Length: 117
Length: 112
Image (tube, rainbow over all chains, first blue to last red; front, side, top):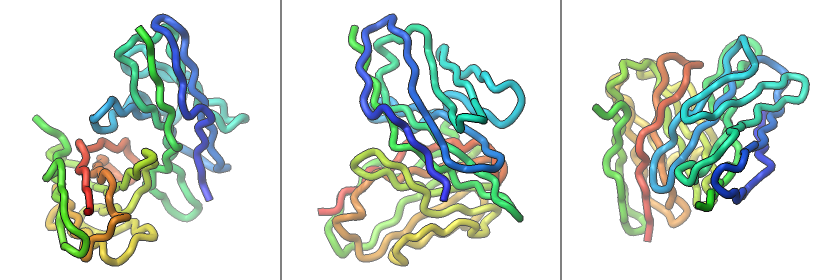
């Protein structure tokens, strides 16, 4: 079964620190990869996505992520975080299965980022 | 303009009641979904419809019944509510079966 692991459950950073959130998935086939953000009390918003092409993708608000196929990873990065980045971050995978397609998004358990001013 | 909307935003009810949550998208998408987010923020898909046809039905109690009157609407009806049904329910839509999913604001259901 496909699964997504986010190793950091809770990250605390000071403003201007660099951020890297880990995401690994288990699936041997073609995948689409996503990072979503959920600000306190709000709905999920798409930060960035990878379908194909350049494995380094840039998203909104200065975020980027790198797809490393050999490591089954899609880590999220930001060079300098702000207080307003405080939120829950979810990695998700949409996997294609043999003989068809699936549009199930499999989510990781989320990483709660707290940025201290 | 709200792309994916849900009503109500909050729903507090007693055990054993029947309730519905409504979802509408004005994006012209073909595919819609229901997800459940539990108290630990874990998100899991429940159902997906593509052009009014059910295409994903995860292991969900049959007390939950989705209904899609047209491709812009996907409602979720829950019978005989239980304490464990308390969660935030998110609706989402995507242009195609494998497209990017866009989420609604969520409905926080509390069963007392």
